Image (spheres, one colour):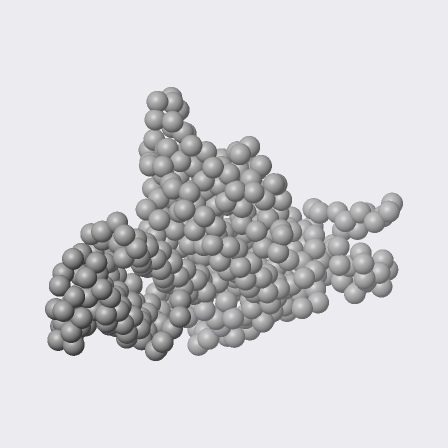
Length: 449
């Protein structure tokens, strides 16, 4: 279309006024054709009246167009401005998108181009609003994920957020640990520990493909999957750089739409990255805390934990015991059989000591052939009994090297907080060291407190 000005309504006015003038000029000839007196038709006065009438009709049409069409366009423009203002308001924030049909939709009361434009505008607003809502949810969800570096806490909180955001009734997060799936987050599911052996779950992890199971309402099920009757079960593999890390299971009483299923993929992808970071952090923390040869706590981390337990015992007036172990004549083992055999002996001693400890007790390698045991809630008698159990277990153990059978013994010194006037944990260690020295002086392979 030929544009005359930069305004559509200005162009329309020019065309309508021009058309009105043309009608005014042609109208006298039309009246002559219809039989009107030529002396009346072909006069300046009649031509002027016809041209004026044409211009007046054109002007009225312009006003009507501006009122009817322009009003609709102004309304569309105003709603666009409102949407723009809302976008500026929520940009960079976590504010929810307040754009209901009442606030942002245009009235659709015609089936012409204007009506269709309004309908398309409303559809666009709904799509934009849904996209922004999803973006806000992902942003909030991702921020939540970054606040958790403990793997189990991350999985449980991620699952709780997914259930809340998408209105799902139950679910579980299983993570691959040493070749098997371990349940690290669960809500509303029965027999959660058995999910890691489920064929559908294992297939999802092996194929790295999402799986959907729709259960018809009339179908009879035994109810072992969930504590309620499910209608939709979704299985999502947790994939990081092409490797399967685990599976997320979501179970709903109602059918989950395909759109929600697609959106869930985005959230699971965020979980995969966060889970990888948490696992990496856990591995780094473990490397920083564990002695690589024996698998027990190293000196730095172990002494830090001892200090924490000492402070807690003093504040709560609870018992605490310490054992210090030293391998008898360990240098001779290294000189005779070599350091490889010496390392195997140390690993065996660590295994023997660990087998005699309760959950919560600490086993620490102080360095070389020296170990420390921290016994929580242990009295003087408890310290002596545990020390004797460790000594006996070590003396009965044999390390095989070819045809050689190597046996070693340990000397152990112990101390309890109740029997020592200790200002700090170092005083407790010194008391145990003193007892160890006395054991060595009196013949070794004994326990002293």
